[in-house]
Length: 321
Ligand code: CP
Ligand code: NVA
Image 1: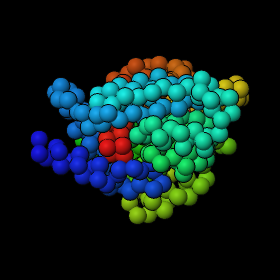
Image 2 (image 1 turned 45 degrees about the vertical axis):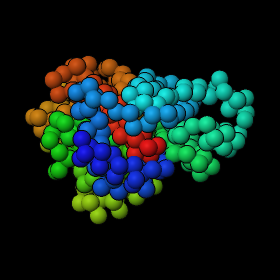
Image 3 (image 1 turned 90 degrees about the vertical axis):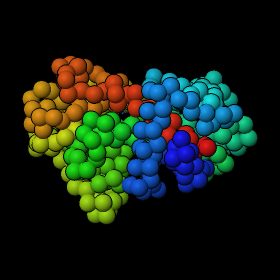
């Protein structure tokens, strides 16, 4: 119990007040600290040990896009930490009627202890964080999804024992997931290969930044169009939808562009025998992933979805504690 108190005290002292917008201002050691806390919080939940670390605290959750996992896991997470979460669909707030985000940020800072936001523009989340005097957590933008990749690493540790020497292959769109996976993998020293169709590569600035991380951490980074080469002897195969939220009108064009980039059984066979399959969900069966892979024995997608809860509780305790 004392060791536990020390772990969470240390976490809170280190992270208190920090934003989590993406991982560009985090270190590999900090990510490992959050993952350790997530593991502890998961074990405590399984043992039925109460975790009232955020008693009396309120999280506001601004949503401009749909969500199942993010909304429910943050809401349940705050409840289990002794606090509460408020769901703020922006269309039903004054934001939807044109009240500036800058005014909203200052108002919400007077009521809440942290804000989670899911929206389109990453820059608007950065502006919100600059103005708000409470921590801001990115619940997904067009460019990043940091909470998801934290849960992804927790899942890899659970199934592979550690992150040491692990190679992840991400197949598909160079989107928010690809950018965040590039950041987190290169900070913790994992190898990361991204295979996309031409024209759908990850953000060039992120790639440049993570190549610098990789030099420091010893990660190997491969950005390629060759999906089979990318999957060869990999430990983790990951994919995401071809058309993200907000890209619905491009869906038909993307179906054609992504032909040949489906994760199917033949692709899984190129990876290591014990490789795991990850998908942030929601998944489109028969598009980016074959039903047989999604439902197959290598798929750990529901452990991954569950870990959103534990990883985010760790972030909440850390920044809002
Ligand atoms: N993976 C994820 O963020 O799921 P939701 O869109 O359901 O929140
Ligand atoms: N790339 C997807 C991720 C959903 C969790 C999207 O942005 O819609």
